[in-house]
Image (cartoon, rainbow, N blue to C red; front, side, top):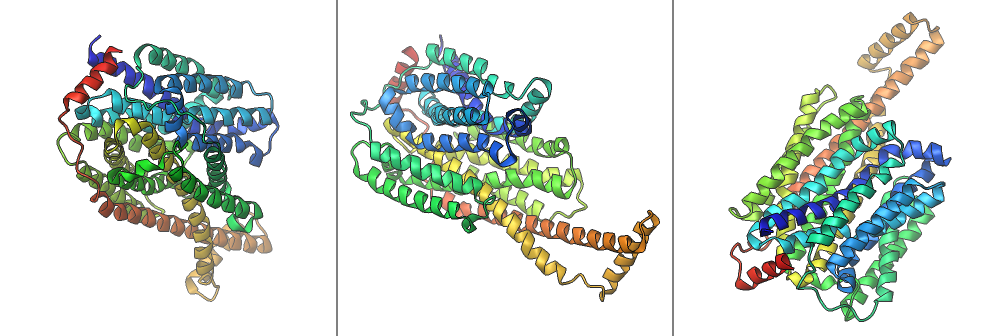
Amino acid sequence: MSPRVHRAIVAIATMLATFLVILDVTIANVALDHMRGTLSAGVDEITWVLTSFLVANAICLPITGWLTDLLGRKRLFILATVAFMITSAAAGAAPSLAVIVIARFLQGLAGGPLVPLSQATMIETFPVRQRGMAMAMWGIGIMFAPIIGPTLGGWITDNWSWRWVFYINVPVGAVAVLLAWLFIAESPTERPAVARVDVPGLVLLVLGVGALQFVVDRGQREDWFASALIVWLSVVAAAALSLLVVRELRTAEPVVDLRVLRHPTFAMATAAMFVISIAFYGIMVLSPLFTQILMAYTAMLAGLVLAPGGVATLVTMPIAGALMNRLDPRWIIVTGCGLNAYAMYLMATLTLEASYWQIMLPRFIQGLGIGFTFVPLSTVALSAVPLRELGHASGLFNFIRTAGGSIGIATVATLLARGSQAHQARLVGHVSLYEPAVWDRYQTLIGMFAARGADAVTAERQAWAHLYAMVQRQALFLSFIDDFWLLAWIFVAVIPFVLFLGPRPRIAETPRDVDRHAAIVES
């Protein structure tokens, strides 16, 4: 088999695993109401189906490098994929809420290593000059899954059953396992197996990451620090993560190897990805809310607003990968950040009379920007790390990306709610019957409701209610605008830091690189 065909098959296997894990973050969202009815669960209870998966996934991401040292990359990939298939089937067959929450937690643990493992495998399998394109191929799975997830989940739930949202993972996972077994080779650069388990580090990781994920996921619903539970969990997260850093920097065999941050380019790229993820995931939350709440779009029409951005991302990722060998990646990333900032500027200048095309255009531009940001930033980060540390670096990089996304979602949700309250308090002060414009509007509304058959008292109450609803809508709109401006400035603020990244990865391969890739293919 030629090396080109072999690398293509490895790419398919790794993309399938990546696609499944990212897909399961979003595909279950639209089936929650059906699950709630089947399992006799409350609205707050059924959200644990999502939270348990995210918490477990976040816990397992940063220890991927340690698990790779323990089991080997190929063995861990296959075991994690098989475990993901089994736990998916268990979630689909769950007879009660408790069972499905446990199954989803185990599913999150199994899926955690798959994303960084697939990324590290792609980096090591492809030659240096092709790594940009390899990351573009890998990124397609990352970006395509959230686009298709809600639509696919809704179609499966409506036509089959919500249980098939999980069952569908089994045949796809089986294909990934078969291809991995036949074509993915053990890395010749693996470290020796670890001699012992860093139990204190593992315990601190579970406590810190689990508590942090719960805080950012449930904080807004629990009114943040007005809740004693959120306060205590924040203390636990801060203390555990602080002790984890101290522990992992001192122990000889850390469960999370923070020493990879000693590479300046990797550290800077990881920090940039954290900030960009805050803004990117914030946009993914704000866009559908803006269209459905303020513009009264249906779920399908809101999806059609998001879809062009996803298509733009899928198109630009391969382009960005090809440009990596011709241009300095820093300028590609700067272009991507600039496009994202411009897209948020367009969103921040919209009005409530905006057309579908005026709303879709910023989303399309933002999709172009993500394609030019994600691929080169991932490539620059991981190309700055020696291959023997790639597992640890990829796990940490993806954990930081996920943590940034969680914080971004929590931040925009909080700012949206608090900003709406602040704007409403300000606008109410201008709604007075002594204002001629307000008085005229009030009288017009009374006449309208009276013409519909309401008596005088009822018509006045309905007029006031209508005025109040107008104030609420305008206050929420202004809060959305504030958030869009904030996201625009976040992308602008990242640009100076991107320029401090190291130069582009070398294109020419050394004889050692050639021998290493030949060994991977031949094995």
